[in-house]
Image (tube, rainbow, N blue to C red; front, side, top):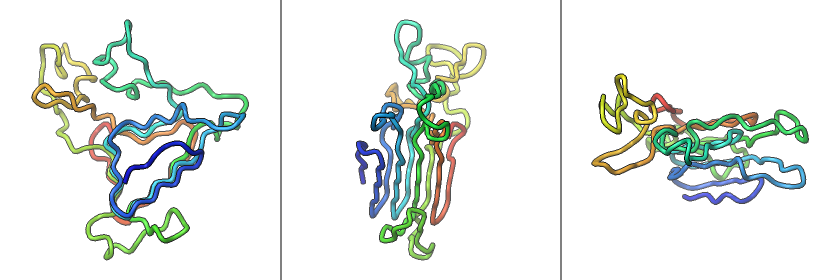
Length: 195
């Protein structure tokens, strides 16, 4: 199920798997006269799969003359710096908070409630990142060198097959000052070294 961003408190419940297909940068989603962040609640009766970044409290990098997309790791989030603290809000409410539940009992009012493991049918895990070898790009020279003297971390985290760019391995869940609550009926897995 897709979740649409647009409300200060987002509660996305789905009866199956929820999968991210693009980076979610919540740094520009603010509400009210104080420009306050919100609380993102995601519940899936199956798996919650994050193959991209869920981020707030960081300023995404802008590529251009001084920083190319390759140097930025093909991601506006990888080199993002912490956002400036606003004096108008308490320190602990500067960024979005996340409440994530896989294997959720979607009939329950408690966002943390999960179904018994024997009812999950092998589902009910929070999966962060895609599974890739530790050194996915063994090139030591050329324009996409990831190892050796010419190697760049930005090329190491890039996902490409047959010269087709498929994004990057920087797949994280992070917030600057908010809280992150993760609940799962089965497992919570960080699936690669950049997760």
